[in-house]
Length: 473
Image (cartoon, rainbow, N blue to C red):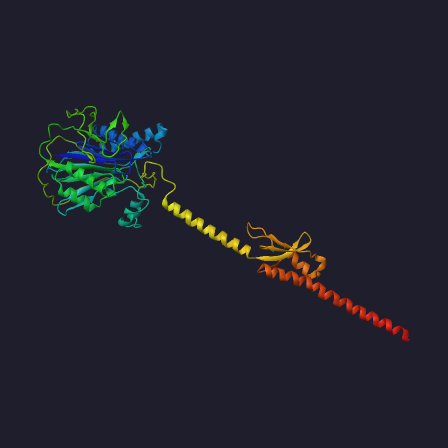
């Protein structure tokens, strides 16, 4: 006969104020929920989902019962989000593994469900690696499956946190579901993306392979994720399949982090305690004390779902990967869910990058304005102002916001000039400098005095000639 032993660990991480992950660990059901939506919405959604899942599953411990439990959890989160406007739009991921029966050959049958991007891994002792059992319901995972992205590109894609499916967003949900036949010595891992964002599969596999004790393995995974950055909440549940009689105390239920008076905890640093919830109706409650001692400062809380002595020997070698049957394959509608924010506080609007952009933009504007002003001040033209020939600084008609200014107004009027020059003066006669403009004024005034007297002399001469000729007749 085989049975499950579970151990859970969680930590808020270094950049979050609250822990929106919730882990469930019992000897027949384990789950990880990663909430999203507002300051408290994620915490509320994840906790509702886990509690409803446990209650519904205990009424029907089969694969169909587990699927029904997921549907009940979805309905509960959705109904709460609609009834409380402060929680509108909240949702949660959910990955759960449940015991559904023993096989004649001693294998343990497990049902696995998944919605969102929390994951399940199976340890391969022979190849010393882990197999990812679930498929993320995310935009980038869809792009990987379609060949648009490689797994390496998906790991750093800016939209990797945008989900295509999550609990509580729509009135109904279609989870992915599989059945696995696991031999004694098999080990499963359920985790939120706070772990997989920081650790690769090789890092995860090394811990699960090297650490025989489930509680220590869970704690070490969380510790490593924090050491690598700890940007997000980190939550893991380790499940070991053990051979032998089921322990006498068989209904220990642990949910972490703790909720006080039905409200999510405002956590800072490590979670304090793990407490047993009241068992579902018709199930005997555990005689375990209501709480476990808190972990040392800076260490994640670890909770186990049975009261048995931890395994002290290395797990037996599993020669092949257990059978893995998909119970249902849900359709994949592209229903976008708000991505989980990495920050609980309001984003800083003024950052170094923004400051540099503003400085560069201001420098470009300043340089452009300087060129325009320089070009305007270096330009002169001769025109008319108040009936007199005038020298202006600037461009005829003005340049952008710069109007021409009067430099010198002469006593020369249009009547002192040739009519052809007056036409050009009305348009503005441009020169390259102030001195050139003064020279142009002098030339215009001289043209009148040179050309007009010459015409008068010619006329007088003709008249004189006529006068002297008349007396000779």
